[in-house]
Image (cartoon, rainbow, N blue to C red; front, side, top):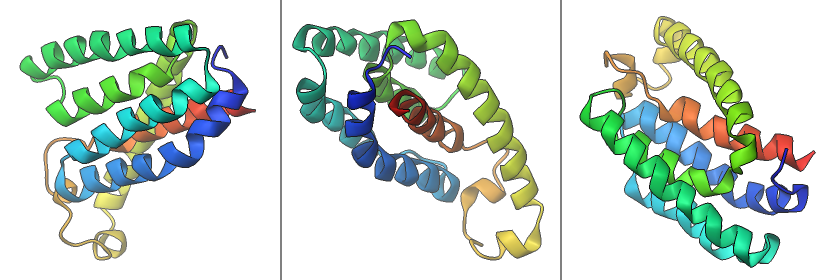
Length: 161
């Protein structure tokens, strides 16, 4: 991992509640709130300069722009939602370029696990009954925030150890 362990440990307490918020909201309403996306970017903006060298912190913002452009192209093609694209872009500055391949493997594993878990939960009346109004139970689409948020969190946790 290229992300310094000190930086990862500093980000985790702030990123954790945002990731829970994103996953929960996407399952409940099939939307990732813009406020959650802004909160994530704000965490990097405020905490980052204290835990990363300033030139490194500054260059990481390029990742946000690149992922945002890619995300909007994918959104226009119907491959993912706008909230997913915005969340991925806000998460991008946290990820060092040298760790991108590892993050993609991590994301693939988490996506498979999240999809299977969501579909099993959705088919289980006892679980569905605990959150009967969740839109993801009846939507044909998958709440991608359920995979995107844990991917960022697990990346930070792996970098922290």
